[in-house]
Image (cartoon, rainbow, N blue to C red):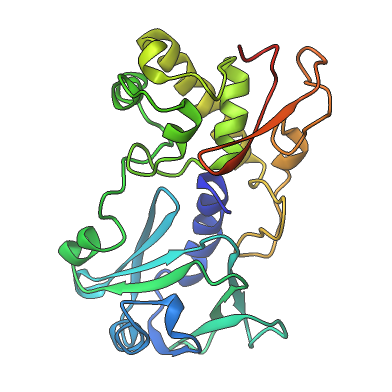
Length: 271
């Protein structure tokens, strides 16, 4: 699933190709990937110009004329494609054309867990995709991070994945940040103390920044809005490296299932 660095890479490469352009038409092939529905999405976007872009967690938010919002959530396999004509690929569920007759936007999603949405105002956005979403993980202050995790008794890996605690971290960057911080994924935040949690946040910020600089991790089919894969998967220390030597100590990386997700860690470095 694309996580914060991957989604930010898509936002950065998408923004200069859609901002300032006015939507002419939206065609939705499958209702499931349109929010709040295909007709509402098409009617809401039609005739509006995209003015600015931002991201919260794994959600791309485009600000539109009239105080409305256009959102894109990539889910597990979503891709945004900018092209002159519809690509010869399957699973393209939404096509957006623009009034300037330039390249169109296509939304492709094999698993169909992602969605494109239209929200008429800030209240609808907050009640919709942003409801219960925690603050963005990128750039989070050490004290704020420690405060949001402090006292929690669930395993820390599961807490990092909880999008109501902080938004944007998924399986890859939780595993990688915990390894860099030397913290077991089974550790409980309530037992770690603020100093350790602040160190974890510093390692998390370091990991997210490096991943973003390298275009994200392309462990499956991720590409940005220019069709470019990321390279940070080449720098993974533990994620999907079960049985391989830990780059820090040489001990074999182990894999367990935690919070319903595959979890990779070094039993020696992360006690």
